[in-house]
Image: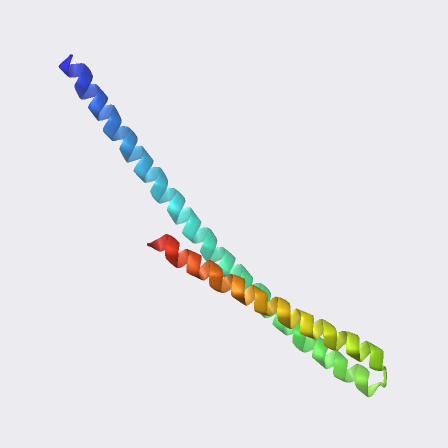
Length: 104
């Protein structure tokens, strides 16, 4: 009888230890994922900002060539890329905040 209780206690402690280790591993993966997503959003935002700059240059070139409609379209695309870059920066900040929260 005592041996059975001792075995049950040992098995219970082992299960608790396994659960704690599994939770630690899952928390680490979540933090790593949030960190990677923040970096990915930052890279995307940088790319969109570069594209915005290129569209602005194209808009100037089209204006010089007196193709007003194409210049307007390029300016609109540059503005939209700027908005996307801003949203991606917001996402990056959110992922960084999530990463910090998960580290706690």
